[in-house]
Image 1 (cartoon, each protein chain N blue to C red):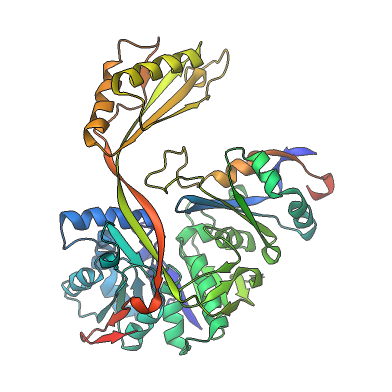
Image 2 (tube, rainbow over the protein chains, first blue to last red):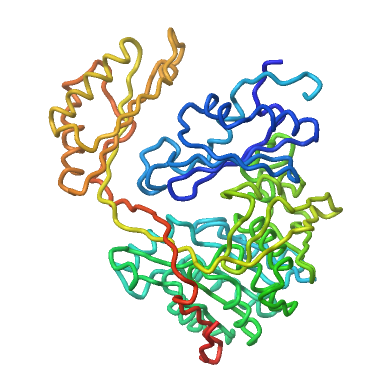
Length: 106
Length: 413
């Protein structure tokens, strides 16, 4: 079913200097298996076209993926001219993007 | 077990949290984090105006109101509110005249190595705090220590951990990471906020055990929630690779185990390993001056309106250092004026304060001479200085981490 990612996934995002981090987690093992296959670096760049270089880290113990979006915030919070200079809502933006999620996981 | 609470996640957090944490239930230690990268810059500007400042002034006011109560209850206070001037804050707390044994931690200020920086502070670890507490301090104030050290220091002192007790240190670091942003662990800013009562989340508490494992909880009767999901959310905040580097230990976030507990969430299983030989340094330099304004573009021809005002402003002051963003918040055939409007943001960042002012004048002068429906959300001001944050790394051995004990004795950490 085509629904917002946030139907099953939570997220929290923030800043580290000029980089943003975006953690995404789900609440069952089956959802995590799907998330890990779906949210590749390429897919995150499709969903968040403003992203440049992206690293992905897996935290299976938390059923979570952590993405580091390099350089998204320029020279950091005090200098960034970005709409959301500390990337506080980056995770909520990702959660609002529509993706195909198997009905059994909803 | 030692019960460590948090009452502040940033400089400006809920003022009454110190009182709420002291009076809401049992506590051994109350911590508060006041320092973000941006805060160091703000404190740097305070210090530039008055060398006696440079610490978080709200913390002092919180202690004025609550320190007597904390002493009576035997709750120790540990905070990085010292910012750029922990010694000045310690003296100000002494002047409150309540007879508290006040200690402070210094050595993080490494400006002499980075003379071009407005602020340069190495992230110190937990051992200075532990020294102060072992010497009987009631209040410990620090400059730039890692946020998690505010929890690791009291736990290490309480249990007598050694510097190579890496698993215990890593467990406490993870508890500290959960606590450091206050109510972000208890349902604040939480994706699934509609499933809890997020009106006024209580501040978090970590009940840390001798092996570094912990239970995250909050005082009975406070709002928000402590669940595996709220704690997971905070664990994911501002992290990079799973090997989370700190000055005392590398904490392996892929070994954290979370389990529901009757009073919150239990954290266990965390593995630690030896820390790097370098310390991270938070550098803030003045980047120049910035100014910005937002033009409201309503109704038809939004792109053409944006092009006109952009052309006008660039013709007046030149296009250099301007950043333009057109947010298409407008809707076709809208039934409210706001929904019919797009927002054109423009920011100037320049080394020349006169140019930041000229930007203002040029924007205002367009008021009767630009696109139909011209108005701005707020008129531009005179411009403000902005900082640039950078991280640097220095050898640990080059940083003089010192604990200044309540009796004035200085201990090299």
